[in-house]
Length: 281
Ligand SMILES: C[S@@+](CC[C@H](N)C(=O)[O-])C[C@H]1O[C@@H](n2cnc3c(N)ncnc32)[C@H](O)[C@@H]1O
Image 1 (cartoon, rainbow, N blue to C red):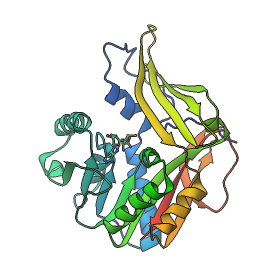
Image 2: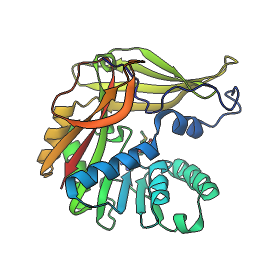
Image 3: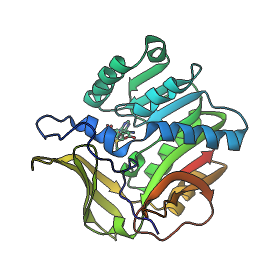
Image 4: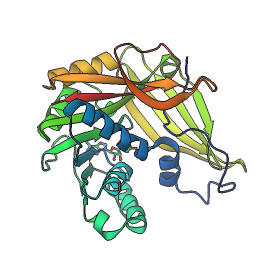
């Protein structure tokens, strides 16, 4: 059995020394806590090749925020291109400044980040559409989730594949805070409220520092806690021909996830899990 909070990064000792709330940037801490774009880009490549027998080139990142995945995608291969959509200008601007400082002009030239609503935004048909970090959980009603998936499907090439991640486990239904020590700070994932009648869940990310200072409610998510069968049913209703679920293996030394996601027909009733779904157009 493995237990994990919705954070794809594993714990690490402070390589950069101790941090403080005043000296920290919440987007930087977010990227360090909950994103693993290199692993996700490698996963997308592997799964797309196994389904389609070719290497994907174009990626659309919905809810792209600081567009870490899109940036990683174009850095991965000189032929790769990415387009990203997000509604929140300040977050996109933070990402733009960050990427401009870290990427070569040729890579930036293959990265197209736009302000737009993923429910209606149009772009050139892509091989891969990724919606990660559970962002689509903000669609609380079934018809809204299906409408989003239906639109996303139209943005794929004929043999395109949509990738979404999902989380769950019995701990995700309980009102509690879990934490993980990272590089000079502690990441906390709080489920403030879960309502079994509506399925709505209210989560917060807090960051706590060794000097006792904290960034409380650095991020808040008012979501519907969708289950894998519900998500697959919505994808099917939106017109996707087939869906595949990828479940994380367990590192038996730590009891944590090992970061390797394999196709499965059966999961594990553990306290906390993260999984991916690949949906074929
Ligand atoms: C949970 S964050 C995910 C950021 C990033 N995808 C990641 O993997 O960490 C959700 C993002 O979705 C954006 N968002 C919410 N509703 C949206 C919509 N309808 N269209 C585009 N972006 C939206 C928010 O501005 C926010 O940046």
